Image 1 (tube, rainbow, N blue to C red):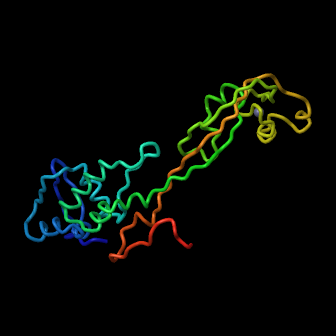
Image 2 (image 1 turned 180 degrees about the horizontal axis):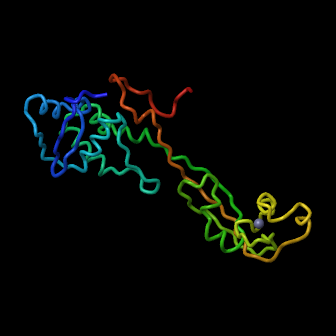
Image 3 (image 1 turned 45 degrees about the vertical axis):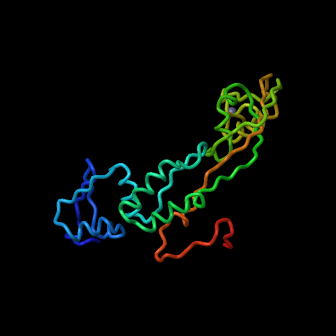
Amino acid sequence: MSEPSDRVELTIGERTFNTTRTTLQESRRLSNLLRLAEGPYYVDADPSLFEHVLRYLRTGLYPISHDAQTGHDEVFYHHLLSQARFYQIDKLETWLRGKEYHNAVRQRSCHISLTLHGPDQIEHLHEFVPGRNGNVSIVRGEHSQKECHVCPNKQWRHDGRKTDCLNSGCLTVKQARFSHSRMMEVVKVECIVTRVEVDQKRLMRSQQNEVLPPPYHETS
Ligand SMILES: [Zn+2]
């Protein structure tokens, strides 16, 4: 816990931040300001970018701005790099300049085949992708009309999936012997699912100036 005197009120541009001297000490510029001047403290800089800087100082986690479809937000990193220089935060500057964020985020893709029964399932394709999260791109789709199982309770998610009806109690084992089916549109979809994984270890500020080994070669 911080001593009461450790608390500091710092105004950046048009916003005031409450933090501690301990949190700010990694920034040479801010710790010099606090050491050399009496409060209130004011720095004319961008408060929305300072938010990210302060989060880094508080948590020791490097900032990531990444989207599965568009990738890394290089403009954001560029602005943040200028802030790291401005506030004189060496580790953050080195990390951003070396584009280390590329090593902290990985995209994994896998190939998945799905069979969807009826228009409702086709419309809700994403629900049927295992794991659900991730970006789905369809490689191929094959339409046909087929006689398929229909849920007697009108749950379209069960259509073509008799075991789902059995597991949910729509049918007893005895009832399942009889046919509950009709012709419906069936689509076989081949898709690529891309998931984004963040390597938490690579996001953590190191205690010393140790250099992490190159990525993708961990032995654990
Ligand atoms: Zn059912």
